[in-house]
Length: 459
Ligand code: HEM
Image (cartoon, rainbow, N blue to C red; front, side, top):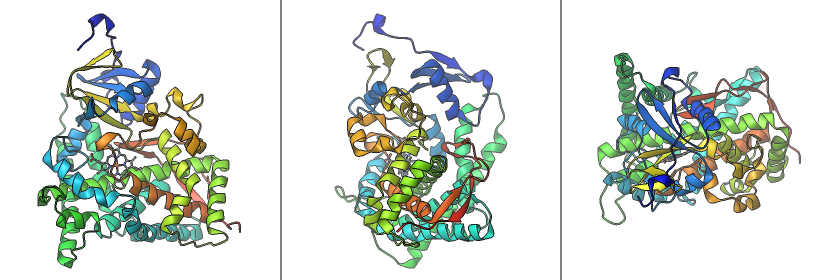
């Protein structure tokens, strides 16, 4: 450290142990940030965590020369079932760089063209299912159906495996097991050290084994088919060699990558779509603009066949998604660590390797977003507004080399589906829904249902 201790500033420390475990920890830290400001330390049962949410400090944490990803306690828990998969690998684990380099081509923008037909096929499953609900006069459970859609999409597009979620009355059991594993990872953070959690841990182990079994089935289905293509994620993992050193991924690592992608590839996108629909429902002007956009693109066609290029033309709808991700980034925090001892903002001392959590929903409410950051306003993502804003003000996909590899995949899939939905239906707020946010490590609207009516597109 190169400053005198006089320059250092004490970080406010808030002890929440007395409150006990909460099932909405992210919203709890958001409340703490509102009260104690953009830098504070939360103490819970003896464990401490530093949270940061102001633009200037987050911009510093995003400097890859000084900081890197930190696998914090939450991800350590997730590692119990994803090990050195891309999301939870330590920076220096050889399998991170190996898998990253092998899989990157599968996420280039051009590759989305290859996934487009599978994405459209699954989007149609959703609209077929919603048509049936509409005909029966029954409501749709938005988050549940978005999860069906995103799970089937990553299954088919990434692995050529069909979860057939819309043919099931209940979501695929993979979803339940996954949600419980994520929930276990989250609630384990707030455990009372004197408590006995044997039952929870045994249930977790059974769920983790179930996930591993599903993954083995996905891999076995491909191997048995004799299909040796290398244009999807599984094909690349099974067949491709590292572009520089010629190595391949091990069987154990492929398993961890498949679980990682099945989880990372659907849960967050499903939440983003659900929040976007919620905000469209509550903001008739934004909805009308979205419908105008699809009407202009698809004219009076009631059953459009979106092309890959069409999705790039749905600019307002993409802005709606980004604005929903601003207010509720569905992976609501990411952690950074200093490469060497340093001072954050010239005043908060950090030791090399100490974790700092970026509280993304509060970064997204920083004063850089204007006087009314709670207002849903997709025009914040007009190209001119975006160009004028500092790059680190918006971080729903994390940062640097460990940022989300699936960002284009998520946005392509979600923009197309949202376009199809607003073009086809009138959304009816039959319960006068008020947003409640459910947390299972990721965020989504809780208990959000809609009824639908068919819409006549304008010519
Ligand atoms: C990493 C968010 C969709 C795969 C991340 C990170 C965030 C994030 C914040 C960084 C985590 C950290 O720094 O600890 C999101 C959101 C999504 C989304 C909000 C949807 C709206 C997807 C999709 C896929 C995916 C569709 C795969 C098809 C991954 C992977 C990583 C990652 C593999 C780890 C990358 C690495 O460390 O090399 N995501 N994600 N994500 N995401 Fe996403």
